[in-house]
Length: 100
Image (cartoon, rainbow, N blue to C red; front, side):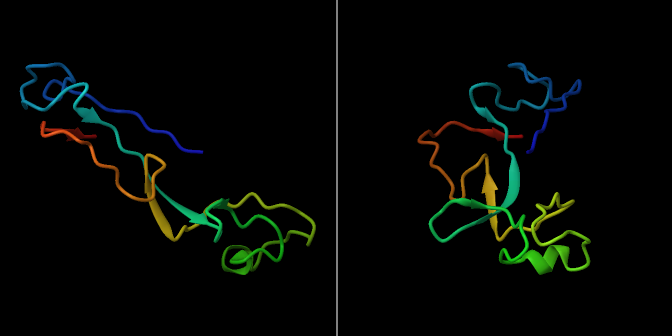
């Protein structure tokens, strides 16, 4: 799970005509950057059971039984995703965009 919010101030108001002259909606695009792991078939992967690949990388000293699922505090994926996409997506526009 992930979430984010956009902070505003008197310079970056989010309104047209803001003091920084930044683009506003619809040319302002929020970006959620995360790391993920995927199986060879493209499914999202999370090492949560004993014997899963990378289990020992994260839970080597954990006190879970072999049949217990984990609730890992952290996991390092091998792919970066932006807004859920592994690869970039073309915007198809020549307007100035603001990525927040």
